[in-house]
Amino acid sequence: MDVGQLQRQLVDYTASLFNEKGFLDDQFTQLQQLQDENNPDFAVEVVSLFFEDSDKLLNDLARVLEQGSVDFRRVDVHVHQLKGSSSSIGAQRVKNVCIAFRNYCEEQNAEECLRCLQQVKHEYTLVKNKLETLFRLEQQILAAGGSIPMME
Image 1 (spheres, rainbow, N blue to C red):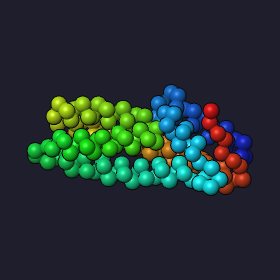
Image 2 (image 1 turned 30 degrees about the vertical axis):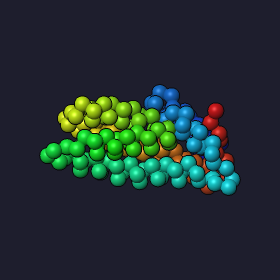
Image 3 (image 1 turned 90 degrees about the vertical axis):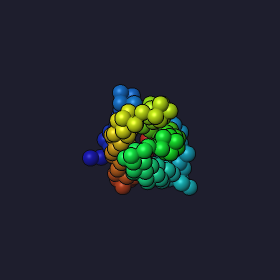
């Protein structure tokens, strides 16, 4: 595949993540705009940190929710962190599930919190796979000698 085709594929793929799927919001675009020749991997590095933190938070959440007596304050702290970090990279669907999750923490509804945990894990896995695909496409373009087209 030539560079032009890869670039068009990247533009179309990125647009789909914003438009019909709602995986990402404008915060992700702002993150990408912080990249420059001095820090070309900025977005990848920030998103990789998000993945590391989120994996740990999701494991912590599962552990806290599996205890006989659930500490909803601790659950809420973890969900609040996940909401903030997903918001900071523009992972809109993860953030939206976290908002509902926090409401169930307030109500101390363990059953709904467990359901939200499954939903947030699902949305997180989806966005992680989508972003990994996006970054692979970018790497293919760079390896082929092209440049990454900027999104409007």
